[in-house]
Image (cartoon, rainbow, N blue to C red; front, side, top):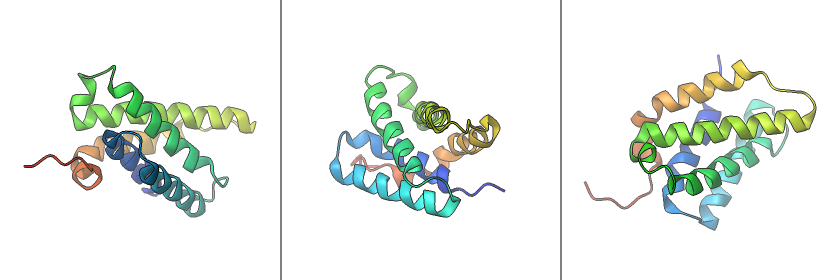
Length: 128
């Protein structure tokens, strides 16, 4: 069974992207990514870079895809796509390749569950 740590990194990248560029959030994502590396036994720094890339690209793309970014699942889908692409690029550059099923399953799970956990990762100051 896959651990939820990569999902938590995707949720954080997605939820915290609405804050815009922020050095504290970037440092937190980097730290969470390093923790995911330790927990999953992955190469040190790879999950951290994947999380930061997904965070940055989600912030950038939210300006261009307003309709998709309007819903929690839409924002998670955008982040999931960038998460997948970053993992694919790191897999190619490492020379080891990547198991597409092994990375797709946690991403799809994270996208599906994001609307339920979004309240814990959304740092916007919207009043209910």
